[in-house]
Amino acid sequence: MENKNWLENLNHQILAKQIEETNGYSEEYGLKLSEEDADVLIAEKANTLREERRVEFGQSILPKIIYAFCDSVYISQDDYLDTLIRLQEIFFYYKNEMCDEISDDELLAFMREQFDDVCFGDLEYLETTCLEIFAEAIRAGYTGYQKTGGRGEFSKFDIVERWDKELYLQALKDLCWR
Image (tube, rainbow, N blue to C red; front, side, top):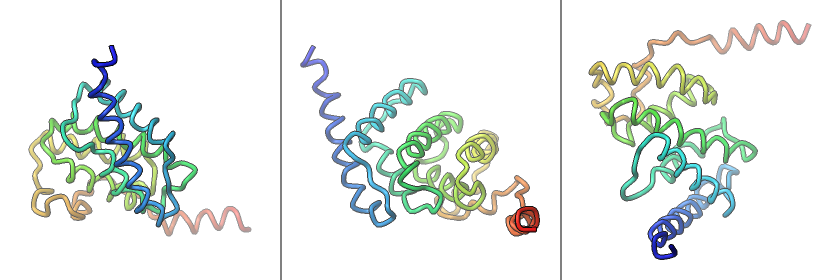
């Protein structure tokens, strides 16, 4: 039994080390993962891969997710672990939904841009609106994202009417500070 799990244990150790290394960068933004957090992330990744019937070869996507999102103003230390768990679930789900027609880097770039600029940190909106529409477009043959290699030009892919933040803040101010 012990020999059967040696590869799994080795993969766990390598990924835990990679996650630990991301702390050097994420700490600049006030975010850090403990060893226990890394273990939880790795276990959740295994569950998500199993649920989505996916296999990861080579480098794990988890460090890329950490580097892509740790500097977002919408993530704090209090919700860092939970946010990373959800982001990796969303990532693998949409890799399937897009039939692997989009690269990991392109999907991460789209997710990050939408997370900050459209969703304002709302993971549910990212998953159920932005990514759902984008996945539908990808399945229908949309390739406009390829012109930039997925780097920051997704704002042109904006078919969802967004609310006006300034108008919302003014309405909130009028309601709360009478």
